[in-house]
Image 1 (tube, rainbow, N blue to C red):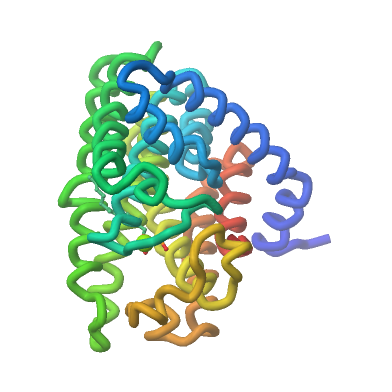
Image 2 (image 1 turned 90 degrees about the horizontal axis):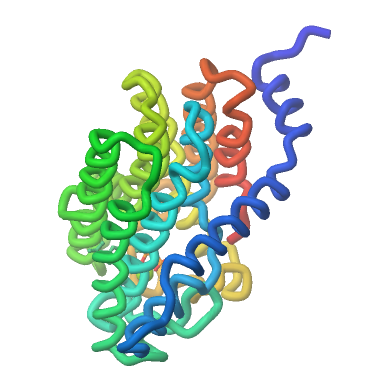
Length: 308
Ligand code: FPP
Ligand code: MG
């Protein structure tokens, strides 16, 4: 039987059990995160840091980092400290994002937000503590990686977090709040920085740790750029279509805050189509890796099919 490329891809994914793969990887990441941050004096700050770090979540960033490290010939052990650091950075960005000075949110990952439990002062410090510790953790705990590669990864993480990444995206996002005339270009800037930058660092850091050639790193970067934007489009769609229980955070917030979103510019149907197109572009980038990239192919599909 002659099959189109797409159909062949679907058949392969059929044999790949993504749910089991994600569950196994999640368990490995949870255990590593748990070990990474014991509670010592002053207990209050460690408890606040752990409260958000261990609150669940998909652990997508660490899983992507582990997957690309393995795909390009490295090991899970090599990449685990960076994988944990990515989750620490992601968690701290959410703690700060939920603060009254930013989005003023009460729920995250199905639990009260950090400042609701520990107070604003401690929540700010818990975010700062996690951010600093992420870099310390990568530098101290990474084993079996050449110093040159490790330095590259530290620089990549710094860039993804700072004004050239998350912070820059968040600033433009805050500036745009309440504006009805936000352009598609500005919306893309926000999400390429606020969301895609850390996903890009997650994917490319795994490859850099394994010493992958630059061509492969660039290919994986393009995969990440595509899934990063698709991830945000789906997030915007879910804010409209999913319930608070499904999301683990307040639903319908974008409308209430009059935020510009992809559905507000394109409508729901066009947004879904654009997300699908980005996901198929992402998968095209993986073609040269063949069967080895099956986990990354399935993760790309999962991004558009997820319900939370
Ligand atoms: C969630 O966006 C927020 C982010 C993806 C990151 C926000 C970035 C910061 C607060 C900067 C943090 C500081 C440093 C130093 C990294 P959202 O509000 O659109 O989504 P939500 O519905 O999940 O809150
Ligand atoms: Mg928010």
